[in-house]
Length: 206
Image (spheres, rainbow, N blue to C red):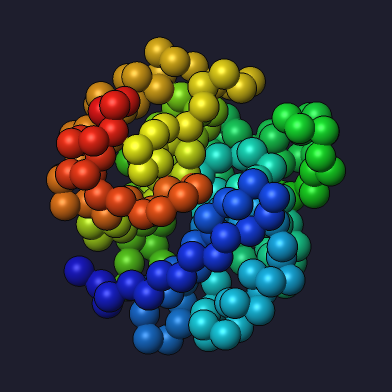
């Protein structure tokens, strides 16, 4: 068990995406999760928090979760982590879903289901959760889940976009999400935080 996490949520961009700044130890080592927009604002919050980012963890490749990753990678000289099924989205060669400008970003580390990412005294476990995109993942650390667009408070991510799948999302929810400990705290890609217990009681998709 590592030191207690310090987590700050910064809501960014026109899609109001949740970017999470996570400090993993007293020395300030930590990660940035899903920086979708407003890199200057995120950079200032990182400094205010006295965070030393070792990695940028992406739950998936959509522009509203990854568009500031390149600028922050350069600013903090830290690695960008993404599942290989979504990493091509970050190249800037594919058109974006909403016709918005994609800021290309290099993926430094491609991850697989069950892999762990060591940061400070903590271990972030990768849970592959296809459905919203082919390469969607959640990151579990201690009893906390960063769920991206897989699970929201009262809802789930869309499956009607390129790479989405109703069948894969259903399997993900049944085998990867509903099986988690009910006391797991969930920090989603949009909207308020919740718990697995609350979602199993009230979320119609679970």
